[in-house]
Image 1 (tube, one colour):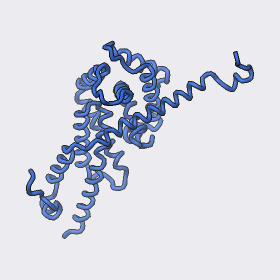
Image 2 (tube, helix red, strand yellow; image 1 turned 135 degrees about the vertical axis):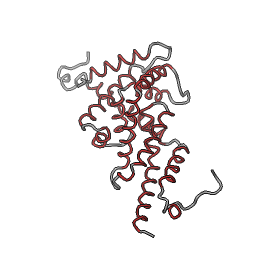
Image 3 (cartoon, chains in turn orange, red; image 1 turned 45 degrees about the vertical axis):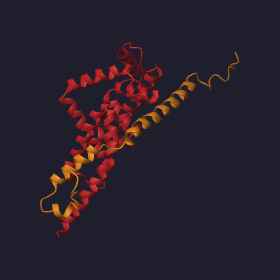
Image 4 (tube, chains in turn purple, orange; image 1 turned 120 degrees about the vertical axis):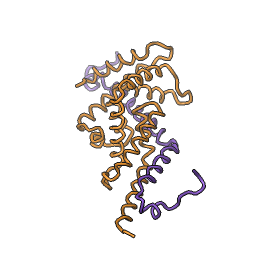
Length: 77
Length: 197
């Protein structure tokens, strides 16, 4: 009812939707990063470091073992 | 003492430290590929060990994050090929979780997004995660996925449209209706609208 004929071509009916879709996409992007970062911020399970440590010991060349691996932790198994 | 051996030890230490610092990222990427947390950690551990075993082929100073992500992704797909039956089961499990609230404490919106992500084709999901959350440029994501840059761009935009369509449609049905079917038809619509190649 308030539409003036000369305004119509400037304001295409699709535009508000496009803008809204863009905002929604932005919101999804924020949540996607949050989802990812939630896992990034979890403490790393000990298992990971344990596996790496074991592999490290196994792969150390026999001649370098004494010099390279500074402290063989005595108490803990 | 042999100075060359010293250098190798130092380089190895640096490699190990860098690898350890990437573990949180690898776990996050694995979680988006697998969905299920225990399976994702198995995958991330396998990838970490593959990277460690391949340390002599890594070129110091190149993008180690991209390198390890590529290893993890390859591992994921070779596991998947080895057991397509398991993949089938995973898909069914993903659909079942559409009607189950796995973590009541997590905000609903995040949970919805998590479920919607699971319904995307894996190549769209990984492209979106690498670019949209992993902090990779399109070029880096293309290298990780072994495809063209344009392919990554189109996968990311299709993934975005599909997610939007799924979330707009209210995501999933908590009353036990066949949510898998509904989701499939929403995704098919989104795919058609975005003009699949």
